[in-house]
Length: 282
Image (cartoon, rainbow, N blue to C red):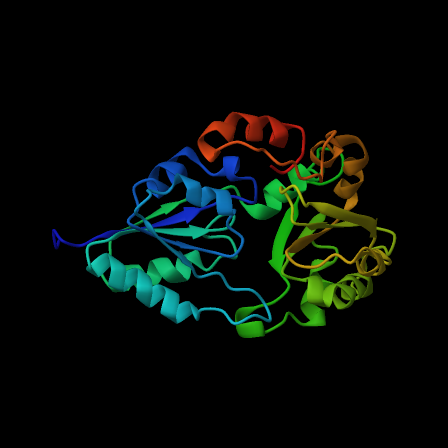
């Protein structure tokens, strides 16, 4: 192996709150020469990088001009070949609807050393922060994670949604907000009861989290009324009823508020932590 070769760490940033990154992920952020981070990576995660580390925003957002995936991959390869240790910071888990496998394949083909650092997946953590358990002994023994948009904008057909309708207890849809009315109707047409509980969670596991609750029949209307947009996930199934008892994150006394901490950053960390504990955003 070339002794001058660098390495790429594909790091799962977790779902939102910066404290939810793994210990290994935080350690590697502090060792990286260059950090390439996604749009959904919490900005506070970059505070753990070295002061001299280069930070590059390579996030992609629908409807906005964004870096091409092939360009991002080429940057990883070029930087590693130049001897750099690169942290590729990806929201949630790098291998769950995050294109981490594609980047890892390209690195392997190019002979670049890499490590995959799992992260807490966004749908699992987001539902937990909304007080919804994906499985439950009495309500759900199966769960399906599915994307609302396939490769390069290709969308699942109504037939696929109809087949899914009664094949699993809990359905969790990522990147499906633009088609929520079509998706929920297709699931109803597939045989799922229209009064099946449903919820949509926007900005899950962050201080700006918002949740819409309803049924398959009316959740799209509820989302429109509340003005919820991406990033959000759709959860369909009886487990969404658990939120009435288990909602803890957005029930905290200062949830949704912003609090100014008039201290230097180095002195404000403990105060900021207490503010976050109570649900506010410092």
